[in-house]
Each structure stands twice: as structure tokens, then as C-alpha cells.
Length: 102
Image (cartoon, rainbow, N blue to C red):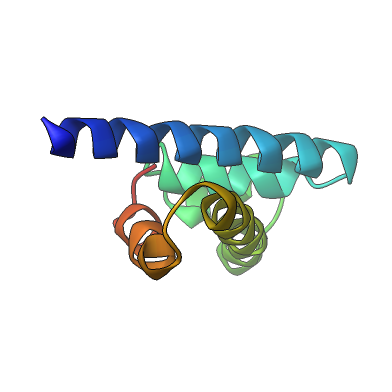
């Protein structure tokens, strides 16, 4: 079915964007930011708990995750503008990012 193919395509794009952003964070000294982003959105951890692990308060952990979320959204938008229909880009991003789970 078409819906399954569409979903598989989007999932592969999201995974590739995540890999690209993680690599970029590692190369630019933002590994703790990546950890905050990934742990919150993928593992559903609270910012307070993430902050404790990273030695920062919950508000700082949230800002760190937001920094990476913006990078992820930009990377996904870049990838989809190359490989997908332009009108669907923002809707696709919102369905994955604002859904809270990656």
C-alpha cells in the first residue's frame, strides 16, 4: 500500500537527518545538546532528569534540546526539499517533531 511506502520513506529520511545532525553536533562540541534532544524526544525523559545527568538545570537542558531540534528541522527540511514535494515538507516535519517522538 502507498501509505506504508510513504511512511517508510519518511522514517528513512528522519533517521538520516538524525544521523547527520548527531554527527554535526559531535563535530561542533554539541554532544551534550544532542543528548538532551535525543533523551527528551526519543526516550521521553524529563528535562530535569537530563539536566542532572549533564550538570545543568532543567531550563538549560530544554534550551540545549531546542538548539538541536532546530538543527534537525533544518536538516530534514533540506533533505526533503531535495527528495520530496515542497508542499509537504512542513507538514512532515510537524508530524514527527511536534508529535514528541522520533
